[in-house]
Image 1 (cartoon, one colour):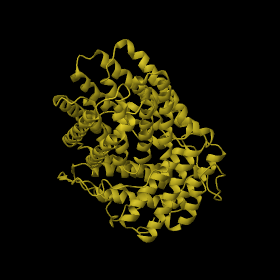
Image 2 (cartoon, one colour):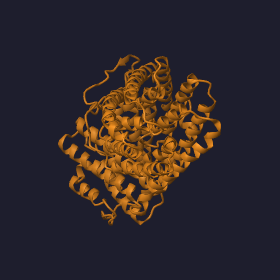
Image 3 (cartoon, helix red, strand yellow):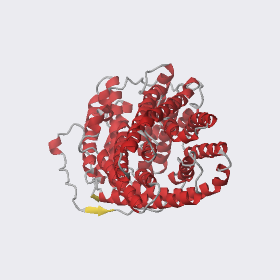
Image 4 (cartoon, one colour):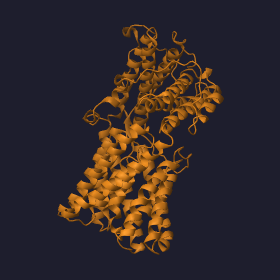
Amino acid sequence: MSSSPPPSRTPLRARGASPAHAAPRARPSLRAHVRRLPLAGVLRLGKPSDIWFKPATSVLVAMAIPHLTLLALGRLDLVMYTMAGSLCALYAHQLPYAARARALAWVVVGMAASVAVALATAALAPGAVVLVAVGALLAAAQKALCDATRIGPPGHLIFTFVSSASLFAPQHLGQVPGHLALTLGAGAVAWLVGMAPATLRPHGPERRATARGLRAAAAYAEAVAADAGGSAAVRARAAATDAVHAAWQSLHATRTDPTRAALHRLAATAEEALAAPAAGDPARLRALAGALRGTGTVPGVGAVAAHPPLERAEAAEAALPLWRRLAPGSPLLPVALRTGVGCALAGYAALALGVGRPYWALVTAASLYQANVTLTWSRGVQRVVGNVVGVAAFAALVPLAHHDHAALIVCGLLCAFGAEALISRNYWLGCVCVTPMALLVTEFGRFQDPGALIADRVVDTLLGALLGLVAAVAVTNRRAADHIEHALAAAERARAHAERALSGPAPDLLRARRRLTASLVALRAAHDTAAGEWWQRELPARRVADAERAGHRTLAATVRGGPLPAEGARP
């Protein structure tokens, strides 16, 4: 992904000046640029997520309960249907519990709908050609819906994995209701597992989101002190803006109570440090973040203006109905189209080669698609490396897993836990555990020849990755640069609104500040997405840098409640 350019030295339009006197906007160049697809750093390990153990433990418990129940009943052949519901426990760990309850319920409903379509198709379809077509369409729809609803990791991949496997499971129409009931029952267990921590830490997600915002603001203050105006400070500023915005979203997702009101004040402190980093104290910000661990009293920060409730007008994009987010021209549609085309190509290629499980190729292709081609390429490299190492891990586990069905269950559960524990460090490392888990699932009905399973998996991985990348390059997203223009216009409107609010009442100023922060997050996301497209016209990088600098100058003024700082002053 391209790094952000240094801030422009071109003077910005003075506050209150007429637009007629602004410099004419340069037309973007139509000259296309082919960007290199990187290899350096693709497999580098990062820091684990601060909540890696939560999805890992949740999926372990949510899978163990139905697995052991089916073992006691002697019906391990039904594990695939309960596993579909159990995997719902992977979702919504970043959300406050009231919002998580709704999101998890929709995840279970969406999973059940995917399984229902897949099982009915498996029972009625005349052949594998139709199954691959339906699998590709489901994958595209799942990708679009997961991106539009912002459900978060693991996104559409789990839905596609489950529905694709269900498509190729031998099925009679009369069996579908019973198998679907197993999915819903396991989904209910996953919902309870996901909500269980609320009894111990009812404000845990909000505390973590606020702590991330404080730590990111501290990192930005340090970067400004060490590298004023340099690329490190620009990157730290983008990360801090995103983290602080996420903290406000978390706090406004549910009703305010005394604890959340105290967290509001801490989020406001992080926001003030973001807007005026020179005045921020990194050590104090990190100490406040550390004090949010556990269930102790939220530390006070003195007199900080209380933020008014979030209005839907401030989150216009989030307030859009789902059909508007998926309307023609949406930035989500090209990626969904890539997903459908890539899955179809991979599935039909696997059929043509006579591979026993073409849905593995389909799922591999579906796993690649990210916001742009550069990220998709990186994910492809990670997927291939992780799967190849993963089949070696499966070969090592087979003697133990084939000992008896209890050992098979234990191996599967450990792989599921390991996948979620490791995947936040790098996707390929998680695939080392995901691959043997997927192979072990095929063994619950009966033990199979491991050599044949390994050969099929390797072939399907290579097919899916290769044809998935072909589809990503072939299905272009030429409108990515247009979305930068929309984001620039929205950021300019938000900045003008914030400048007008400087002379208004405090609640209006605070709302304007949040709106401006959200617009800057959206602008950076739009630029980074377009910058990672393989074939794209020249981007307005300088205008984006100018808009970000002007927006952060205005943010600084909203913290002081006074006039804008002089041009060239550090925000």
